[in-house]
Amino acid sequence: MKQILLIIGTVMCLIILFMAGLYFSYSNREIGLKNLASAQETANKVIADKMWKVIAQKAEIKESYKKDFEQIFVTGMQERYSKDNSIWRWIQEQNPNVDPSIYKSLMDTVEGLRAEFTMVQVKLRDIKREHDNLRTQVPGSWFVGNRLELKVIIVTSDKTEEMFVTEKENDVKLFK
Image (tube, helix red, strand yellow):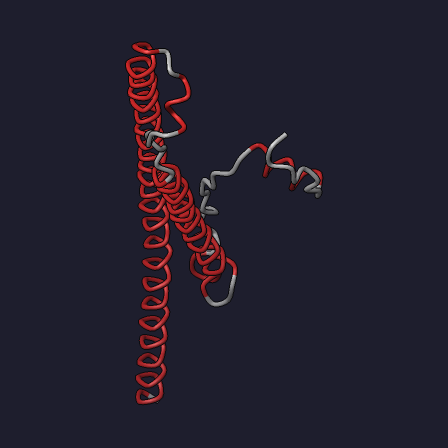
């Protein structure tokens, strides 16, 4: 009889140890996902800040380039043609050209940084999905199902929000 009680006691202890191990494992995983989401939200803010600063600074460079070009061009034209009033000399001369690469560079920057921002937003959404699965699927729900839902901030635009409310995307003209 003592042996049966000893075996039952040992089995119960093993079951309790196994369940405690599962609890700690799922609990730590849930806490890790919360921490990862918080860190990802901070990374999203840093990337969004970088995106707008780089775009703004590149646009300022474009504006500065435009102003400098206008000043050089206007001053040059005034100097050339005010002396002998020969407005037709511009046909024969090589005049300064606008370098379109600065606009291409700005476009590439906008596109690249927006793609980077989208990628980190998707990553944050995936962290939330994984956290939701951990909380709601068996056996994780047994141990961490009562934990609060993870709230994440996904940045969109008014236009996007309106599309999902109306379930329509009719405004496809870029330049009105």
